[in-house]
Image 1 (cartoon, rainbow, N blue to C red):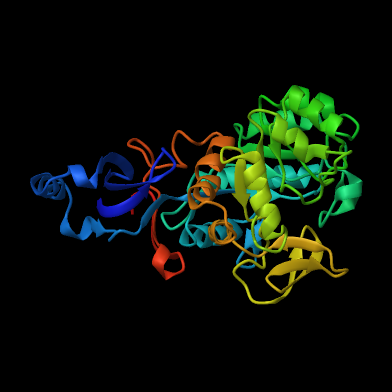
Image 2: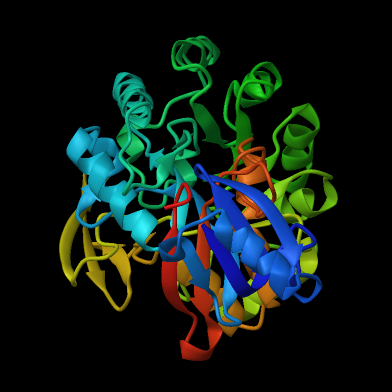
Length: 389
């Protein structure tokens, strides 16, 4: 495959006029369009059939996106732990431009969490061509604060268990990529110290103060779960976990950019405060994503989709109903520089979960997960190329 005449978002984090050659599902070459004469174009075309030449026509050519925090979509949920659910979610995500995913669990009994992770690992080994690649699992709980459960089920909140996590990580060959922990709960600091080299630890669903969060990051935590949501906000005398994340090198910060969970002004503030290298866009989506309004289920609790989000019966905001491609477009429309928003949905999440060697950017040697986007038609997703197809 040869992709011509595109504005390619490169690892320089800017758009460049380039052509991309793909062979056997891998990017084999990239070169500036202006430096490629007609004879060179003809020679490149000889390497591929006419059916495999794609004229991007000046549209954006982006890396496939990565969502490291989503619970479900199209009526299915990670917690279903079935082939049917994983297939349906992976197909939807791929068709939405999200080509690599970390399905996310919730606060559940540990034996159920184990079952979910092992099913996702097993399924990832025999995925189909029409699916986004399942590259790991994100564990949102059960080691969180009972005072900041949000839409999680408080019945299953428990103290951090090092032996459980050590065994799960070993038995699934490091398939869990992220875990949310409230650093103030009993045993959390020891858990962070013992586990941070085996799994990326994220601070979230927490009542932590600034000092405790700083200590957690010092001991090895490296992430912040859905910034602003289910945590203390920034106060001039109680700066909290957000300020601790800002001050700690290497810490990445998720944010839900669906236009509901976080106000657009706060989205702009987050990117401005944290910088382009720390921000990660997530969907935090549920079963209701890609579905009509109505009643659904999340972590054993009924949720209701209306007004472009999902809520518990008491009105508590429960989950997003957007995918991460939509979140990226929201960020751009909210005023985040487009180059920053794209990086936050591709390069940064892939780097955070340790898959940047294969995914997250466009470079020779990487998997050919490529999006063609028309910014002149409301950022219409014209084509998704996954594994070079």
